[in-house]
Length: 366
Image: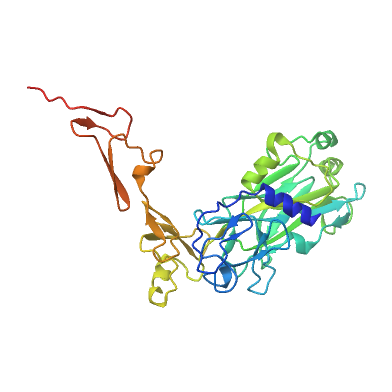
């Protein structure tokens, strides 16, 4: 089941283009159909440091890209894609599941806790706040997330109106009827999900309810309830047109987006002070440093008018805007310059050379 699910998710994940990864000599530049751009690397000596070191598991087809277990924790996550430009990586995790006795409300089963938790502590990765949503599926369901210290991070609650609405899969955009969603804070590096059920009678792992409303809530329930953190686009595709299976009882995996950064310095200013020690990651002269918005760290981009790998000496190359008419329209005379270009109307004409028919003949007059 797990292997088949992993293969399915790899098939659904967007592949990183097989462009030049500019790896050091002798270092693999790809794993399966995923390009490995420096500062990432496969094997010792191929990455910027241990945090960016990856493994390529060739026992599977296609090979699996794995985050190395360099810090001694449970960090051997499979990466489904990796991007240098937007500082994102994709992985997957198994949704947290708890199933209950429909008569008593007691929990009868749940999936393996180790399979549903994920720790990124000590790595360059963080769970993306902007690209992920916390989801509770099934009802009644109070799903919540805590960090590595056990402190509350986020939660949401889903309740079904009637047994008929559960059977029909009625939902209105994850607004609490059968499913709900919420956001997470920045800089989350430990994912520990939990679910609280609802029941009447003795209090235990469930919330104790003793009211008329409680009876209605418990009548409108699903056998199993789920909680997971997932990529916004994955959610939109998986539940397009409200196609939500509330009555599922199986385990399933979801896509998660990770933000990565160079995290051995608090920000760009602190990193630049380490220039002499060669710790500053932005090696290309034509690159810029960008502070991350999810805690300590920074990333590097090529300066405007350049492209390539800013983590290499000379890795950012001037682009020829004159050869990219769709991005840089010029219907006159185009001259490329370092980091920019000059577009002008041909001799004897004037106007706006960046639009078609924008240059008109100059009125010479007598």
